[in-house]
Length: 232
Ligand SMILES: Nc1ncnc2c1ncn2[C@@H]1O[C@H](COP(=O)(O)OP(=O)(O)O)[C@@H](O)[C@H]1O
Ligand SMILES: [Mg+2]
Image (tube, rainbow, N blue to C red; front, side, top):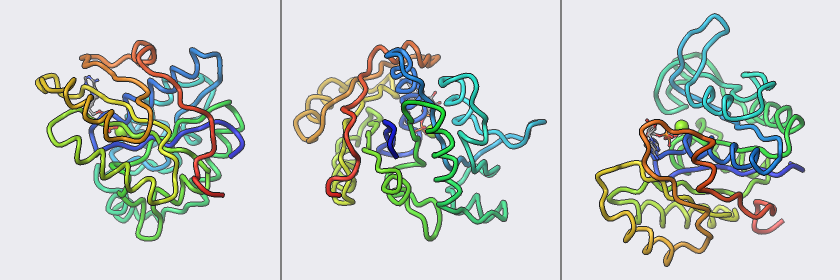
């Protein structure tokens, strides 16, 4: 992909990938660039007059440019809120990398920067024969890791960072997200994460009952625009 973009993964599901991806989209737009979020595969959708709609994809759509079609942002909207492989089987859909790439290319033609929100954590597959790294590699995107600041996050963050690099990607940065307001050791954990992770911290998102992408954008910086793959 010629345009600037990042692949957002997380230490797990429900750590704040969507909240952070929306904030990154808002960050780019505050910096004067056209930006869109991309949710290649979304499981857990509601039926609407326009078709199946997923709340992550709708949040990304709301954070991005106003004139972008839902189908470009979310080519696969699977009703069942389960792992993509299971949700796709239930829907009778065969996920195809080419379909995801076509949507990504349509999107990237409309914007200056793309924020791709992955599914679950880094090693959650899209399908039996499609890994998230396959999409990130085809798009040549660097990876940004969202760390849900909670007990256990240091292990999850280190394992994920190691896997990203072992898969040949540049970890462009990581973001701490205060998803758990009762986690009092967040600052101490952040200090340990800073020491152990070989990538810049792009910011820390505070806990807030109603996540606002434009507000959260002020806590973040956009990573260095460099290629995603470590060796090309
Ligand atoms: N900084 C935060 N403050 C408060 N709630 C948050 C924060 N980040 C995430 N959440 C909430 O936690 C849940 C999971 O966040 P989400 O961004 O959907 O995670 P993921 O995309 O990784 O599954 C959502 O209900 C979201 O509103
Ligand atoms: Mg999400």
